[in-house]
Image (cartoon, rainbow, N blue to C red; front, side, top):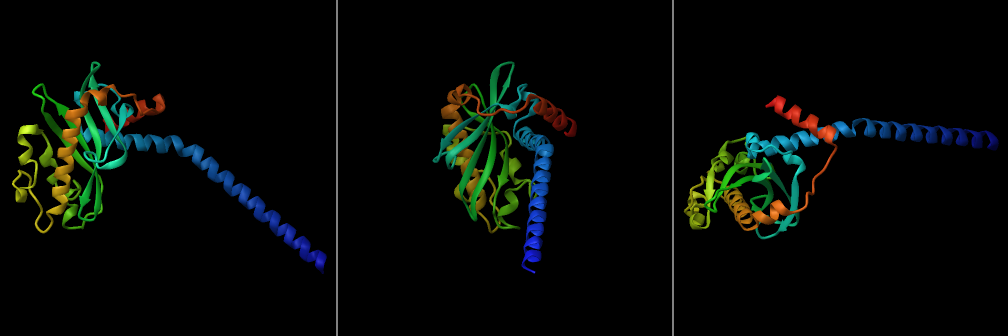
Length: 233
């Protein structure tokens, strides 16, 4: 009787062990079989976002593969490094897309990417802004999301320089940007974050474009990403 029970336990243990080995193998095969596709999708999404804030015809480098990491709690809203993607044409720097964080949203942090170009007059032109992540109230603060409202497009081609700082605020605070009915805190936070991004770019442009490249990936994958994104636009 005892021997039969032991044999049954051993048999069941072997079956479970075999099942675990097969399952682990399948998971590993799935990962290695899809990791390139996942990487391609991630790069494709990144490039689409960058092209939304910087005109793809204004640069000729692989912008999603050319970035630097910078930290500024005061102006970029984070104690951890933020990506700044660099656009160039014929070897000359033309624009940058800065990841930044508005820390004072109504429901917490609002993560953004801001496209910026510098003019000879030592000013900054905002080429585009997109909200990457937020937790703002549906129907109120979520209007910062382009899928909900086109408010964020008001930043397009806006000019920032030290002499016009006062207009970089919502209208309730004496600035030029609309606030939302019943939700002033959210747009106020976004406007301030965009302004701070412009300030940071003006003060650090040379360092941004001279810093070592912190982005890299497979050339084969990246070539196909560019083609796929261009074909979809």
